[in-house]
Structures are given as structure tokens and as C-alpha cells.
Image (cartoon, rainbow, N blue to C red; front, side):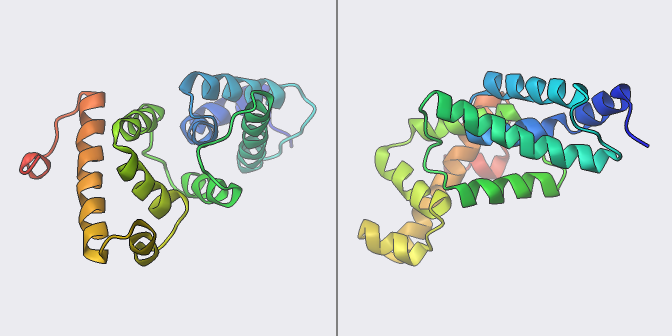
Length: 180
């Protein structure tokens, strides 16, 4: 038995945050992510694809959303930061595999906070997390001691956590504010 249109809409709205977040990771624009989500919803309701179960619909929606987001980037000749396709796959899989607590507002705040960091700090975070280099390699490339890399990462984590909390108007924990 195939899903009715109201079942399709209900299922997509239930998974809206997870799908929109995976789109946002690629396009880095909350409004574009919302537009793409809406396009995916329209395609799902067009009747060209038939879904027998909500999980089948979700899988189709994730793949379609990813393709739409990549097409959007291609059309605008933009590049997604330094995200390698394999990193995008890992991020998308991580979001899809759990009830994501990452909201578009949080991702936007993170992007803004990272943009405010000095270039050296941005490079450190990029090498460590986006290029997935081990700290030992980061220390060699940046000509820093390994302990220095760990200390800087720790300070950057704390700084980003505080910045995101400020951006979102949330109270920082007392532990975060001690040394800030």
C-alpha cells in the first residue's frame, strides 16, 4: 500500500529538521535550505515517486535533498567551504542516524562565530575537523608543539561555545564563563 499525500506531508514534516540540517551543511544558507526542503516536498507529492513506507520516503528525501543542494551550489559556482564529498557523507549520515539536536540557527551561529576567528585559528580548525588531520600532523604543519595544538583547540572549543550561546541569546554555563 502506498503512502497517501497527507501521510507524505506528515512524514516529511516529522523529519524536517534532519533533512533541512543536512541541506544546510552543504549550502550554508538557512533560507536556501528551506527552499530546497520545500522543493523536495513538492517532488515527493508530485506522484512521480511511490513510497510504501515512511522510512523509504525519508531515504529518498535525504538523497534528493543532497542532489538539489549540490545542484544549487553548482549553478552558483560556489564551493562548500573545504568539505570533501566524503566529509559531507559522514556529516549527513551522522545527522540521519540520530535525532539531531543541531538546529539551523545553531549551525548559522557556528558559521558566524568561526568567521570572526583569526585566520590562524580558522586554519587550525579546518585542518583538524574538515580535513580530519590528526593533531600530530596539524602540529607539524603549523610548526607548533602538540600540547600547544591541544590547548588552542580547547580554547577554540570554549570560545565557539560561548560565541554560539551569545548569538542565540542563551546563558553560558558557569564553567564556561570562568576564564573567559
